[in-house]
Length: 286
Image (cartoon, rainbow, N blue to C red; front, top):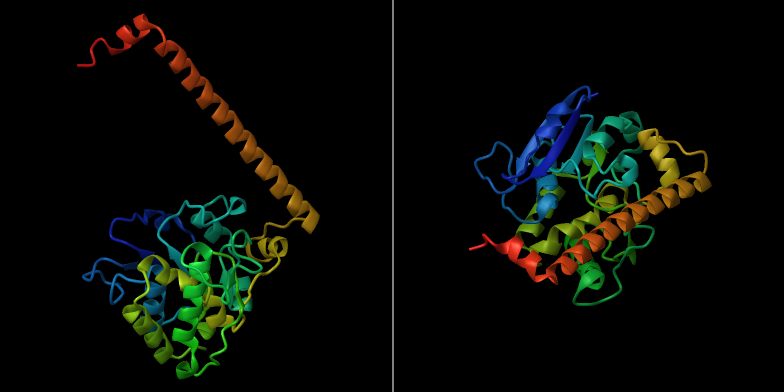
């Protein structure tokens, strides 16, 4: 099985972690958004990872591997949840490529947090936060999938999938979308007047529509961890218990750290009340 790991990066980001991956048949395709002299680069540094992903689909349309995995440049980040050690390399090392091949399109993140089952509501309006993101996604959906694109102009009310625009997709699914369509999506990103901070993020809520024609793609978490990563809880209840305990552990750690911080600050304040201590601590300041 051939695999491309497509990295959406800027020139300052370190992707050396990819050299430690031991995935058979892997080839790393390093796109650099802000370097037009790079071997692989998008037509403009705009639209964040969405521009790079569509550029890859267009550039490699005739040279696609069995599976393409498209990710950000960071190994460790909150984009990968606790069960995956907050690590992209950990997730990729455990990812079942046969399960990906069977499904066709699979989000690397499984958690529903801030994403599923109903995150983006395209009927609401607003000028900030989630309301603005929802309104912008509606605009993006119409701009990319409206009648001129051969799709219905009816925008789904709800668009949802696990967050963060990191996913695996098969050759056949990529090619279920025409080359001309990818060129059109790039053109939309290039010419959109939408603020770049949200422009690429609109596609985070639309890739599941592009590749599955489903507005909501939120597989059951505990079953998905088992299918995709071989992390198999006995039941939903056991999974929920793990999550409850993990949160309790995090709260305890935060509580202990907060207590230490508060104690150290209080000691410093008390020390600062003593003139001799202030004199001793600052004697050689100037």
